Length: 484
Image (cartoon, rainbow, N blue to C red; front, side):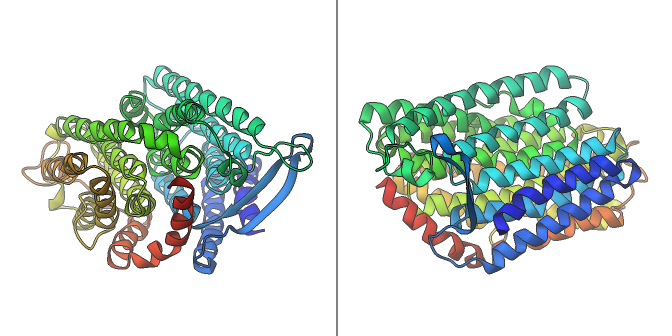
């Protein structure tokens, strides 16, 4: 019943926020998110490292079609459940320094989003996965469209159109797969484990591969399905950007691992290298664009696009290294990118500018911000003993094992990442102060409490990676049996 609690509690908390409203909205939302963090932590520390699904439930949903409301947590989903539980209260806390209009609606949408994300990462039924996959789009759309920047309507419409269009391909594929299943009673099934056992022809697997790939590639995003991402990240309010980059893009990577790889292994064998090539192009392209950016928020957006390309390439390598690396890197990337966007928000709110050439000298009056910024930056550039190193090392090992040349090119992400991240730090924090940064105040108490857990996780994952990898390894090994 723990999984059911993880799904229902954010919804109840969101309804309470809407009911009470007013100035108490963000405090109630934060407390509700902390309770959800406690449930996620319990799942993490109580999880038995094997290949089974744990803490689950299974109820009839559409009984006539044998479609069930079934969810649980296994090693593939565990780290993403923890990531969602950890980041949501920090994202809410990061908004305490801002007075958003209609706060009850704003913070309730974040909690509804959390519930949908938990549903995606725990669903054991194909149609339930699709339901939550689409449900997650609704809160983030309204967050971006209602509280975003000047171009929010045009940008969010493009984002909505891209993601809905892509998801329709997945729905068609799921319906087709559903009708290929059968049982002793003659009923069809949409249970994910039943979809794994289907015997499909190479032709069927090819078109199903592309139907799933387009849906997940748009969400991640992977080149050339990425054009919605930078503008959406920049125009959205910072908490919405954090949700998008920190958690929502992980739905695409997770979907590839959970559905695409084990259901259509022949399709992956035929087209997996093509997917890796597109991912590697995204790594290099995103990094080069990031190097050329003046806008901090846009720079971090392209950085995220580049990093997720490596995750996608690692997953399509179909190796233990690649999939293990993707799982731990999704956790690490979520932590780092949320911290980096919070740094950008603090700088922008104090200076009314996000442009590097208008900043400088901030470190002179901000010892705490400087330390937090540097820790998160070092994690982002994969310095050994930080969280980014563990995932990127495994991902590169997986890609290199599958294709040596593509692995070598993918390795450029470390060099490029150091270039644009250190350039951003140097221009914003060092040098002479400008008229905008004179008298720049250091982080406050509530701001520090956003950074401290993130920095702890940077070192925990980097220094003790086995405490996470041992939980995912049995499930990954079991999953690979369906792929090879």
